[in-house]
View 1 (cartoon, rainbow, N blue to C red):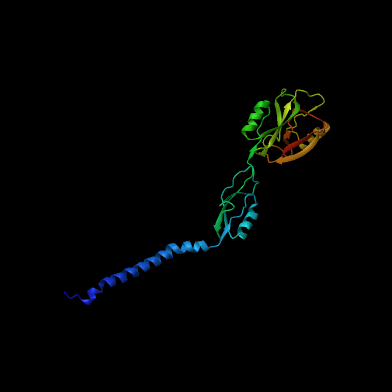
View 2: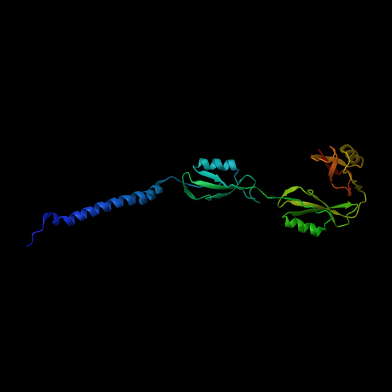
Amino acid sequence: MKFIPEFLDRRPMLYAVVFWVFALILAAIAINWLAMPVIAGRFANTMIVPNVVDLPAEEAEKVLKKAGLNYKWAKEGRYSFEIAANNVMIQIPEAGRTVKENRTIFLTISKGRQEVIVPDLRGASQRQAEISLQRLELVLGAKIEGAHAEIPRGVVIRTEPEVGKKVRIGSKVDLVISSGNSEGKILLPNLKEMSLDKAIETIKSLGFKVGEVTTVPHDNKLPNTVLDLNPKSGEYLEEGTTIHLTVAE
């Protein structure tokens, strides 16, 4: 029988001890880096995301703060037919989702309905006017009979609101259509280049009423010179119609 030194006889046991020590160390590292975050996450405070869509911006922020959530606004808002301007249009995550405390909710504000400028439809046929309004996503409103010294029957005299006004997409625009009949109506003369005092005197003498007087800067006109009027010159109008003036500042 061969003689085996004692230290060699114990070597397999030593290897086993070293192996299990390293195994325990690796297991501890794995638990610390992988398992613990999962376990901790399960016990972290969670909550249901409240619905802040269609709330005013300040009110939405208060609701989220009270719920223990953070918020961040998108740099640009979006136009909306349904959500009023300055109300929350979009929230991410959506309402009803379960999230951790202090989760950031991303918000987008509504800019309301987009605005467009009422086009100049004077002299257009009714069909042409309707097509022009549809292209701008405006709605044809009432067709009002009028008369004009130069515009023939069935042609647009003007719009209400007047040309150049900003209105929201989806707004109604009324058309004043020439009927060719001026009986019982009064011709509105050209008041442009008149002084404001003279224009007011003329308007009143014809049985019309003076409406808003808007001043705008103008380098080449004397102050209070009439630049424009609404309704326009050349229209036959009912007595008592209100005439709005734009004059140089």
